[in-house]
Image (cartoon, rainbow, N blue to C red; front, side, top):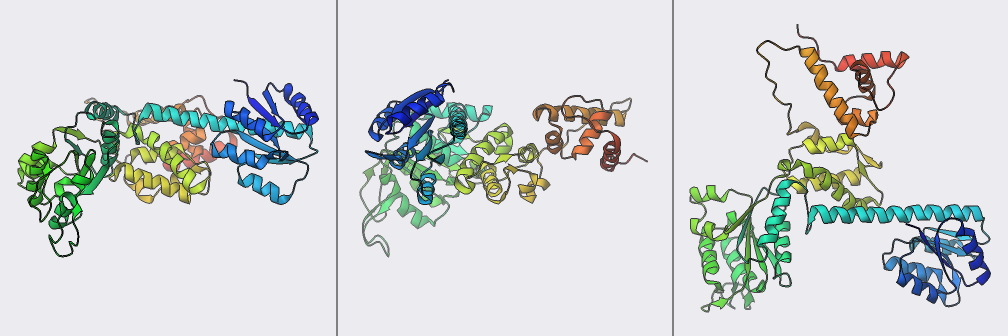
Amino acid sequence: MTARLLIVDDEESMLEFLRLLFEDSDYEIETADSVTAARALLEARIHDVVLCDYKMPDGSGLELLEEIKQRRDSSAVILMTAHGTHETAVEAMRLGAYDYVAKPFDVNELKLLVAKALEKAELIDENARLRQELADRYTFGNIIGRSSRMQSIFELVRRVANTGSTILLSGESGTGKELIARAIHFQSQRAKGPFLTINCGAMPENLLESELFGHEKGAFTGAHQRNEGLFQAANGGTLLLDEIGEMPQGMQVKLLRVLQERTVRKVGGTREEPVDVRIIAATNQELQAQVDRGEFREDLFYRIQVIPIQLPSLRERREDIPLLVEHFLHRHNERLSGEPRRISPGALKILEGYDWPGNVRELENVIERAVALSTDELITVQDLPPQLHRRQAVGPPRVDIPSDGLDLERFLDDQRRGLMVQALERCGGTQTQAAELLGISFRSFRYYAKKLGIRGGEEGADGDDAAETTRDAASETPPAPS
């Protein structure tokens, strides 16, 4: 698509000169001789680059720049002036100008500056498009996942959101139970109503009862006024009962009555008050096991698990890890560093192999730490916490020795060749990246590629390098059996 260039200057001769200057650059050019005219053109369409004079009869280029940035346009703005000062340049860059040039300017330098500004605008647009594509394809609410397990959950949420049925969300801590609960609420007809949440294991029974059902004035020491509980506050909306497995048994009886009667009685009160609330319960425990041990009421268990949804742990959906890593990198790049950060293949391999006892929450913390502490654009293995190197969930596959024996050296060479070819394919044929992915030195990779006849990627070693490579590789080769 042809790039759009808007030129804004109150001098007719300058407008014509600039239009002719960029005419042969295959831009779609529009011109404006005032800030007002420029506003009208900017309202009508988005321009990739805006080349604007600083001083105009009806305003300034800084005003126009500020308006463009407030609208979050991706337009790159270059300001021109014949009366430039250091303070003006600083203010222009602070407001988000791509650059600032003084008249008279070198025409070739100006053309190059506009071309570079266009490249940046196109990059911003492409990143926005890719992020939107990512959101459209693999997100549901604020939840990210392209694995079959998560896609099945997204589909189930769509189907049950408007049913009004009570839902039990189960899964380990950090798997996103509250995010799923919010997605259910905002996909339902109750979306305009409140969404409230309470941790059932975080307070004693008497306080939990007051929080849920409310209390009358004087019901207990310190009850100086009548208060509504969360059931009434969430009327017309959704109430998430988090960690319901830790709810005291006395409260379980009272909750069961509310779910059956759809009424609540305040602490210290005598009147039943109707409530219209959709209940979602969440737990990281095995409620059925608690029922079997007599720790959780069986009748309440069946009442809250009308629609059960089991959320997988992160280690059960490892194919989502690269997607989540990219999402968290983008989130924390903007917040912490302002500079783009990328993950190296070797570091991503560590993340994909780790057990993740803290699930998605732990992964986000690791990425946030890496972004905050990394001093380079590329996040490598060294930027990851030490425990990730020690705890790998995926061990080597078991190999059964055939009845007629096994040629161990040939078997190991075949395995090495297969893994090296796979690493090269994943890294686009770049041996340095493939070596990092496999956790070996580049020289060792180069040596084995030559030894095993692996073609493609960078050139192999020769001469003195090959001799040094052989020594490096020999140190990594396991000792021969005695």
